[in-house]
Amino acid sequence: MSRLLLLLPTTTYRTEAFLNAAAKLGVEITVASGRGQALTDQQPTTNLTLDFLNPEAAARRVVDFSEKVPIDAAVGVDDDTTVLAAVIAKALSLPHNSVSSVSAAKNKHLMRELLRTGGVPVPRFALYSVDDNPELIARTVSYPCVVKPLILAASRGVIRANNEGEFIAAFQRVLKILEQPDVSARGSLSRNILVEEFIPGQEVALEGLLRNGKLELLALFDKPDPLDGPFFEETIYVTPSRLPSSVQSAIVETTRRASGALGLREGPVHAELRVNPQGPWVIEIAARSIGGLCSRALRFVSGMSLEEIILRHAFGWGVS
Amino acid sequence: MGDTEIKDKVQELLENTVNPSVGMHGGFVQLIDVKDKIVYLQMGGGCQGCGAADVTLKMGIERMIREEIPEVEEVMDTTDHASGQNPYYAPSKG
Image 1 (cartoon, each protein chain N blue to C red):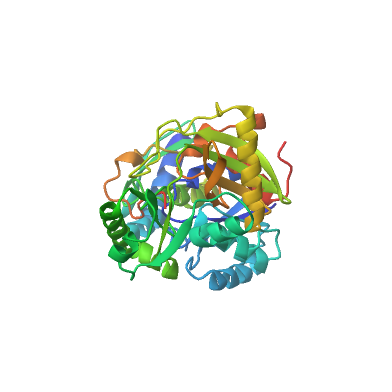
Image 2 (image 1 turned 90 degrees about the horizontal axis):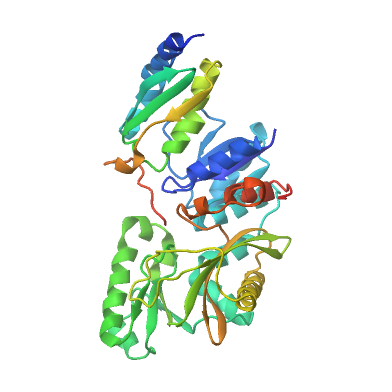
């Protein structure tokens, strides 16, 4: 029987959905977590503790583990574990995205550089150190702008500033977030702050699956609430999209180009874009599926869940 | 094996194996009932609302119950995880 290595942070909301999907597929599961599970000693083939902050060491541990308990697919569920899954899949010679592509998707600055180089529309942006003086930066940026950490999802620490005073306040607020132990533990990425142009327009989220470099649209969500800041809390997502089909096609095409610019070729893609008269702009693109409990709203052919599609693809099985 | 015998065996498993381990995370698991070979459990303390509760239940407790008592047809978690006051691992969106 095939065995899945499921890389689950202990903080994720996705556990139940992925475990249910794996059970439905009838595969064996080993859950790997960054911190100890309560019953690891009693179930050593189904529970594994890895150092999520040290992917190379984690991969070596999985290679040793797989000599006794062979692994057929490695799947992560968030930005960090997606990178880890790529490192592990490479070590196990399993099909995978390149480590550089998923790492780029996790780093908002590197992502934007690759997208800009690839001719994908992105906001103008600049990178600053947490040690830079926000009062000096505030005099040089164009307004309105958006201040955001390089890492973190779900719009955590993403703040719009319309003038110098708001910028300084936003910068200092992001600094406080980056000082939190769970964030600062994530290394050098927590030492920088991204400042980018605010792009007006309607925001959408695209859920897709890459198969051998080809993007398949799974769902396109409209975000009907106006997301003009100063904070960008996630509220209502509506799918299917009510945008004209030509606009939807442009969104898919832009996401396809963005995936290619990063070098992503396999697995789920979650992209956030803004659409205005100039067309779609990529705000974020991640090599993972939508977070939180949002996937519960989605059902696909034959009643498949999003997680089932992701796992079937990871095993190299057909979806339809 | 009848529900009463299943109940006794699950209780023994929880007391001797499961709870000493989950107790290290400030949690506990109670047997609520066994009806028609379906086991109803409730998690408390650090397990209630824990981001890893599903792993503990499905990849640990449920497997141990099925290995020990193959007659069990289903293991149901009746916990109100949303009301967990002190989860060992608090879920978040990242």
